[in-house]
Image (cartoon, rainbow, N blue to C red):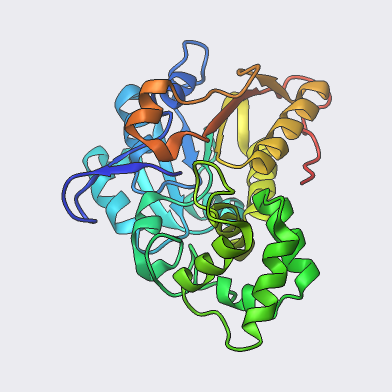
Length: 320
C-alpha cells in the first residue's frame, strides 16, 4: 500500500498508488467480467479504486480499510463516483460479513494492497517510522489491544528473534533481540527512535546496505501488531469464495513472505483448477516509478482469474 503524496497537507495531498497502471490493466482487460463489484480490501485513500472506476464505467467498488483516519480521505476522493463507490471500515478478515451487510452478490474483482500507507508512516504519532520520534504503537486499527511496545517489552528473547527473522528477514535477529532484552531491564521501550537506535547499534549502522538498520525489525513488529499474515490468508480464502467465474484477484505485496503465501495459494489454485494465473512472475515497478516513488521499489504484483466451471471449483486450501 505504500505510496507517495504530492503537495498540500495530509488531507489534500494526492496519493500516488503503486503499480496503478498494472492494476487497471487487469480489471479492464477485454476478457474480464463487467457489471459487478470490485472489493478493495485495503482501500487506503482510494487511489487504486479511483483509477479502476475511471477506466471501467460499468464497475463499482466496495472499499474497506481498518484505519479510521484514512477512511474520510477515501470517502472524499471517491465521492465523485456517487453510488458506484462505497466505503466501509473493517479489516480484511471481516470482508465476508461486510459483503453480506452491503447486500453485494456479484463480485468480479478482489484487490489487496498490503502493508502500511504513506499517511501512516508519515504521521509520527502512529509510531510506524524509525525516522521520526513517536509512540511505539504501529496499530493500523486503533481498536487492536496489542501495540509494538507490548511486544518489545514482554516477549521473551527467542520469540523476538524468531519474529525479526521470519517476519522481517533480519539475519542478525538474535543479536538485536538480546540487545533489546538487556536494555528493557532498565526501562521499557516507549518511543520509536529509542528502539531504532538500539537496533542500529546492535547491527551496526553500515550493516544494512542502503536501508536503515532498523527497517526489518520495524517491519516485523508492524506485521505482528496488525496480524498481517493472518489477515492475508483470510483475504485469499474469502476471494476464492466470492469471485465469479473469470473474476480477477490482484495482490500487491511488499514482503517476500507475503508474496510467498500468494504464490503458493495461486499455484495450488492452478493445480486444482480454481485459478488461472495472469502473471507468470510478479510484476514490479518500472525504473521510472521506482525513482519517482522510492517506497515502491519492493512492490510485487500477482494476478489471477477465478475458475468456477470445473469440479474442483471450490478452490485451494490456504496455508501461511
